[in-house]
Length: 68
Image (tube, rainbow, N blue to C red; front, side, top):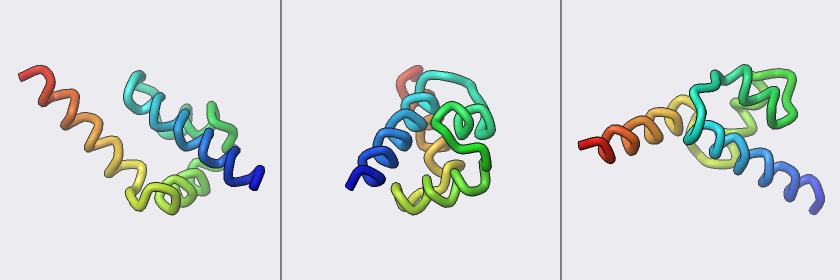
């Protein structure tokens, strides 16, 4: 139970950083507690059913749509 809570918080923080910063995957994975960015990507995809890059593209599309 505690592991799931920590994972949820890490993923939420990563999503927030993706939406609000221009940090790269290495910086984001490190800031949420993962030293291995490839492992972080696997965990991220398992949690959201979207890859890190797919989620990042959705964020960028939403930002662009708001500018129009």
